Each structure stands twice: as C-alpha cells, then as structure tokens.
Image (cartoon, rainbow, N blue to C red; front, top):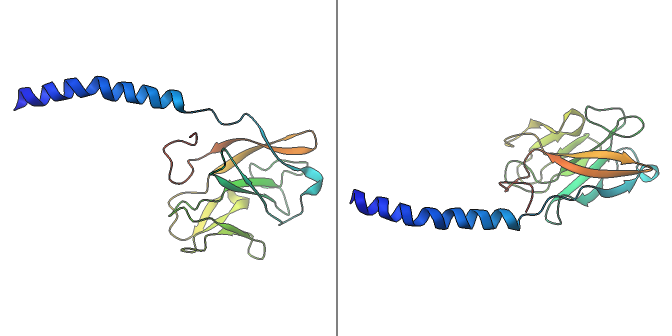
Length: 156
C-alpha cells in the first residue's frame, strides 16, 4: 500500500503543478487606476458606490466630516471600503446618522473613520480598505488593503 500511495502522488504532482501554473497565468492584475468620482461632486456623508478591483466587488467611497487615518483629498477625509461584510459577505451600507457601515444581515458595524474597524458584530476583521489617490480633480482607486470576502486573492 505504501508503494501504491507513493506512485499515485508521484503521478498527481505534475498534474497539480501544471494546473496551478495554468491558473496563475489566467489571473489578471487589478487595474492600475480606476476613476471613481470628481472631488467637487463629493458631499459629506453621501456614499458613492463603485466596483473595484472588478465588477463583482462592490465598494463605497465616503467623504467624512473631518480628516481620518488613510483619508485622501484636500482635508484627508475621503475613504473607501469593500461593501462585503467580513462575516458572511452581505453588502454593508453607510448609515450617515450613525457614521458607520452596517451589515443588514447580522448587524456587524464598521467605522470608516477608524480604518474600517469592526465596532460590533460577528465580522472577523476590518472591512478591506480601497487604496485611494487624488489625481487632478478626481479620486481614483489604486488597490485593496485587506482580503475581499470569499476570495483567496483580490485578483480574479
């Protein structure tokens, strides 16, 4: 039996390695920069929905009232996060009256002014932060800090 097991694994290893190499070639890099919105159009506490790094990744950009860690823009108050809750992947929504991103499924709540940190609930980690940069008069997404729910990598 030991010899048979070794023979099978010896046969499967090249096939597994070949499949992994093929899968790696199929993955694409996230876009270098995706335009989200004009700075002039952003209002405090009015979320702007977008998708990043692909169409299956909903996200929200929010201009907070004051500067926040990791914020961009003239006053450092613009942030963006994945909308997929780290608990079960339900889409969170920004609640301006509470200044939180809240999941309607199990009420996990995340603070956009504190790097997407979970305030209460079952979420396993902070919401993934969308890395932003201001280019000219527009805000652009440049990357993702954290793993989007349900993925092994943020690049499909």
